[in-house]
Image (cartoon, rainbow, N blue to C red; front, side, top):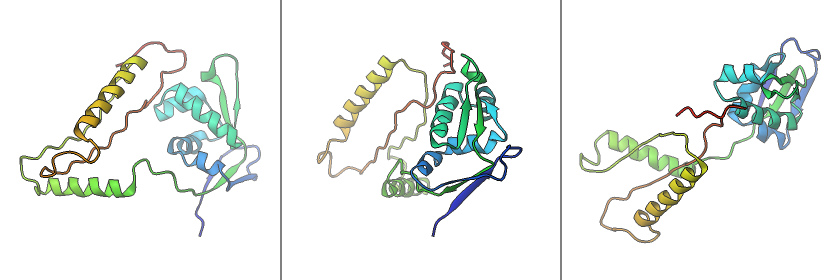
Length: 194
């Protein structure tokens, strides 16, 4: 049984035209930010308008618009050298997309283990002496700083989580980390914010 998602674009010149997507392009449209862009698109918006509405940088919006344009779902009308003024227009009055299952960023069994451990920790199973850390941090780093952080983090992981080693009488700890850029600078903006 297939599930479908559908969006209509009000005031589109071809409002009766429906674009059906059920091939690999559906994977491109499964991205949550791309789908959100389509949801707010209406009859068309500029890069700057989309950026302001979704509170993400122009560069990030432009990247995702280019990916959407490659699928044929939207058209990107370039308006001069200033890409903030480029307009994104829907290619049809409606789209119908076959649901795809996105790749899991974290394996289900790992998620289950972490959720179970957090639940048990909240109930006091481990007592007051165990160590637990849950962090979400972000900062603007240079490429050199990011590379250095990555190297140092890997050294720590290799030291404390060596494969097949460790203290067998100790508590089993899990570590799952993602170190990735979370946003790009706005187009033409060389200033740093944090």
